[in-house]
Length: 208
Image (cartoon, rainbow, N blue to C red):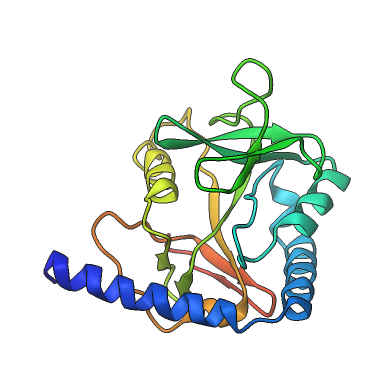
């Protein structure tokens, strides 16, 4: 598929996703965040991971606050992304209340700087990475907002997956069930996920 055609498909898909999200009322959003957090907490993968890489929701994205609190309650180490030099770096938080600052895209980020707080890196222990997006499909496809931050982050670990020193995170999409569609447009620079968890189902892709 030509690059222009793919970008047009992505633009249309993003518009569709934003419409889907705009139709979700506040009560539905709050309930979905609670249900998704509990579903993950009681899933068969929760106990296998020492670290949770989560995100601070932007706009009407599925809120990670409930699952972050569940992870902290279970003494897991929780890390949240901060944008540095065009990439994302995950800093540890000790409380769901921050402290946070507003990042360059209006997203809340940890207030800490390098050297002031623990930074997530390979070798920290088995890590579960909740990945935001606009749309997800049933084959691990993900449509982000277009910045490529999470695709680059995921790729950096998959390129080193044959290195025994690298502990590869499990990358799981985190979404409202309405965001899971039959197929999302994907290009060569887009990374597929290991699964997607919504407030109503958990899809895993064992061949990832």
